[in-house]
Length: 343
Image (cartoon, rainbow, N blue to C red; front, side):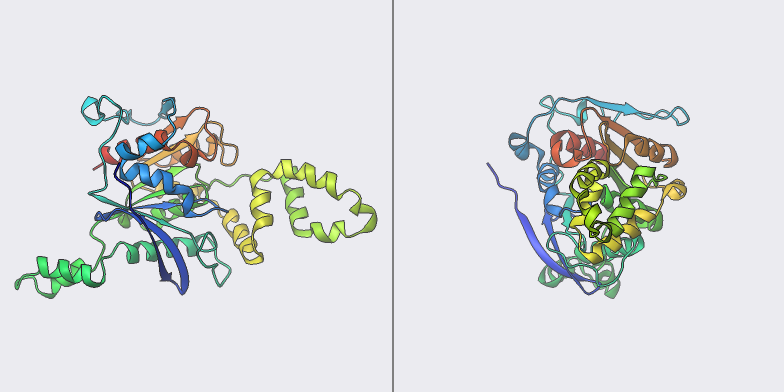
């Protein structure tokens, strides 16, 4: 069986050493943005599948098809994701997209092998990072660029051809999960001309009012060590810690495992609400949500679907927040159909 070549590379963006992986060398970049507290490695199985579905299907767990296609009543009915019999072979496999696309997976700053931001970043800083990252990584450089220039250059085009070939050839496709989904959403709002398609799964961005339990958690997250240093109260540390571990779920784990700088950045990211800006997104958008997602609940996805006019939503039964990492084949087929529909 043919192997899939994954290249790991390093690059400097905004004076930060950034690690990323690539698959394929097509002209259109598909950029995968991961969630908080993990790295781009989580996307490797999905990237392999998107690059060569027929090759990676045998290595991927088979899952039943149980996607629900939902459409808000206020919207014009849209065709199903499957493009008809011709778009899906009898064996359920999809054509390889590797000739057109290059899949690029960064470790976002502060995660994986990438350097932490040197300053106290907010969501806009991550958006600017992604913009510069796409610009740099989707260019051809060095001998490869010179070879292409010589091949395509003619006397009439001259320097104009050089300037054109030095830029990304087409807009990018963004796939964002959770925190990465929040970055991708803000990117689509800020740079609509630079993005061809937007795919969000379990995306953050809808801010909710804190419950009393959540407020207590954040107070303890900020002052916990000082409070529990008091001798009498110290006796209650373990039971209280156990209770709040259940209340806070992954958010607590993400917060306590982060460095001091990333803790502050996490607060900045959580503080920004994108709800009122979603109607500015004009890019064709696909929302894929796990029905059992407890981190970014299905209700958030439905709000996004309602507010993003040019959007379509697919709900996956028996799937949680880790949908794009654990339901690879099912998620990959939905994504690829969406990409092919809008080519």
